[in-house]
Length: 265
Image 1 (tube, rainbow, N blue to C red):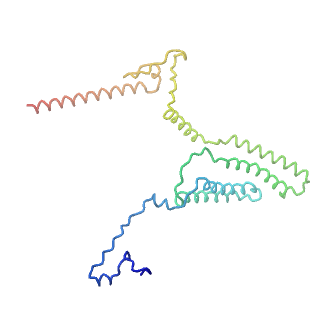
Image 2: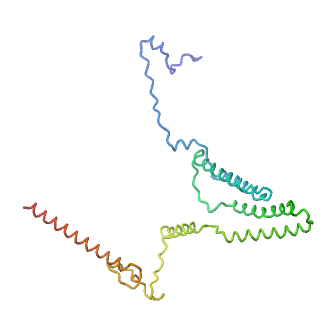
Image 3: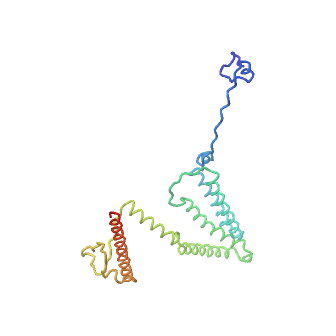
């Protein structure tokens, strides 16, 4: 009951309908439907395109830094870091694909400044591990401070040279991946930028001579293809297939003509 009088818009009770001799209205059925996957993903938390990847890279780089900076003090650290990094990658993938909203795809040439940070940590790690080995190694306890400094200098520069050699020997991009990259660039040049085809190199034709004839004939007996292994057999087999196809088609046409003549009679 409203303090300003009865609310006419309020629903009546069952006893009021009984007093008036009216039937209460039937309740409207609420139609429920299944939530689509897009609506379900919309309710999830947003995976920020910058802060999300920043946090993931930060965690991995921290693990890498603690591992390489003090690996001489704990040789088991790389194994523990490998296990932790694998678990971290799986957790990040689960977070992106299940927990968070599907992020907007964006182009990225590489991992950005994180590559420079990892490179800097590698050089610092050479310095710190050289000091740890030189000044905490039990096999150098009887050495003087001058001998330790000389040993540190040789060890540091030797590890830096070894790192540079390893960087030169190991390819940044594997060979099979480079093939796919070159193929993708070639397809983009042809389909998107409409690049011209490369000129054919025909033996016996000078560079400043006439352009080669690229007309397609039924039979090709030029010297360019006769040296290809199996080309003569291929030509014979192809000629036999064509003749058999024409013979069977001729017989089929003759059969259709006979049926037409019989039906006309």
